[in-house]
Image 1 (cartoon, rainbow, N blue to C red):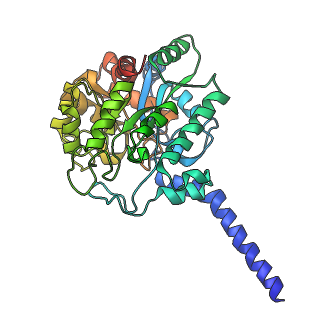
Image 2 (image 1 turned 30 degrees about the vertical axis):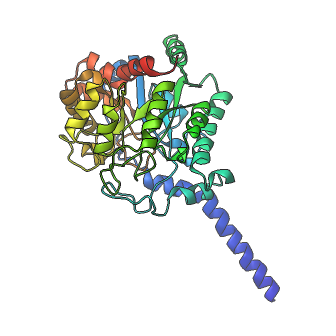
Image 3 (image 1 turned 60 degrees about the vertical axis):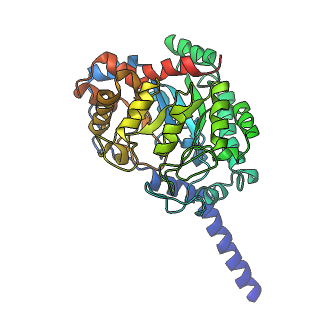
Length: 390
């Protein structure tokens, strides 16, 4: 009898573990990446759809690699995958790798020593064991997944490593081929694990963009959400210089104000802010001060406007358009682009398949077609063509 009870309990435990592994990550993802689309959808006129279909669209920041989905297949959760990116007419997408997130994460202050949310997620998803306790390996595993998708479906996904790769993608799309150009990035420089040699490791793995910090201070410098307004460290200076030498993109999306100033003071830097809002339009601690954004634009950098409520102070396409219009007024139309933060534990008023709703909202906000073309992707394509390695 005791043996039967033991085996029965063990079976129940194994079933419970299997249920968590099978359905748990999807449940978490649905909760962290909600859509606020109304039941009837957002209206898109024939004129707006026609304009949208002509645009070359690019997005600086999305995190679907974190969730271990096969992005070649359309999902019933989250914000992005390859089929939905194609439906939304996206030409170039930056896929960022998330490797560490502090427990109790917030926009005000986080400790680098706080328990990490990503470790249990990777274990629960049964990602490769080497990625469970190494931030470098965690970034590499996500990068390997993207490279594998490009190898499996080269007609649908092409990795962009050089200016020539970008040109090839744009030429293929101009002939009607619906290929997506994929740029690999890291959300924060902590996967370098304090070793400059690891920059070569990430570069060789296809990484072309690195955000210096994320939600906590690290070996490179201070976070906007760290414990003090720390600037750049000597290691951070080495990384920035080495990134410039390689033609890599410096992202200041989560950088502290002092880190932003320090990077801008380094000769030759041309950083971006991949996903953010404009503080003057949405006064939250997630958005950097307007004067720093103007300094980034003055160095011919770009600012990607996000889609979620914490950066645009609203949950509709019109609110995103208001953020973009404020950015144009502050920075000029040549320095504004898109940075959705799709699948990054944020809300969004539409998934990427419904991106034409933003084109409609920009038209409703009385932006010209030339301005819309620049913001939706033209500025990003120009920047990439001028900064990626030859």
